[in-house]
Image (tube, rainbow, N blue to C red; front, side):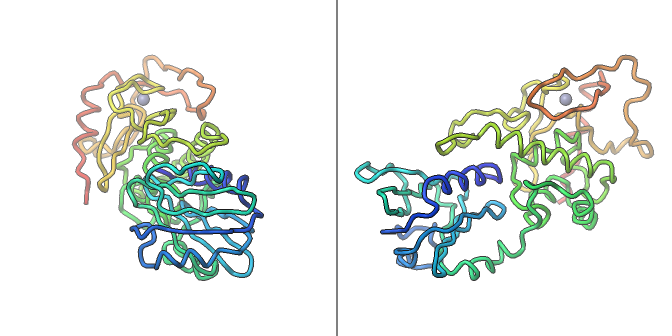
Length: 322
Ligand SMILES: [Zn+2]
């Protein structure tokens, strides 16, 4: 499912393909993708030159000259594809734009959760989903702003980060990956995070976004992991596989209806039995340094608890608190 890195990659491709070109034709099918608007509304961009493509969280705002605009959300399976005139379009194309020079863009979306909305850019920016977006983490996460956003909520850190008000553009994959990198249990209450933990989380989010963008860089639209694209993620989609750091089998839990993947050893949960000490494993007999992995963020050396079954049981025993 497209999140910040996938939408950023799509925006870069659109800039490369059609920025500066004039639209010569546009059409949309009457599907859920254009809900709330007549498919004919797309005709309002015909004759206008595409000036810029901005990414706003998981949205893209295409601004054309003379006040025309188009807002695009890729939903779960949406994708912009390029083709040349004369080339047949593939299945599930919900809208097509033709640009001068014979370049065509098809918006393909098998599951129809995406969104296309035409209108003046300044009006589109006022859409509630856009107007309420939190800071964009791609240019860097400010730990103080993040602390402020998290301190007021008892939701789990996973759910708080999925909320687009907290930071714009994170989804299931990036949140799982970032919490793993930050060694934070996804069910931890957001407001209990210490300053040091939020700082670690901020760096982890930046690292995960960079890592993903690096892997998705390319000329053509990426295959999402759900449609069989390569899984280069550290923990996402890997339940049962060994943790890349400590080899404990990774686990999957469901939070807010969505899967979260984590390592019960590297991301110890809030233990209900121990009242006082959230402290680490006492007196490590042997400390194992994580093997250096080139593509991965630095993970501090950690001690590994041998009590694997116990850790597993406690991790599972937390209620979802919802
Ligand atoms: Zn681990």
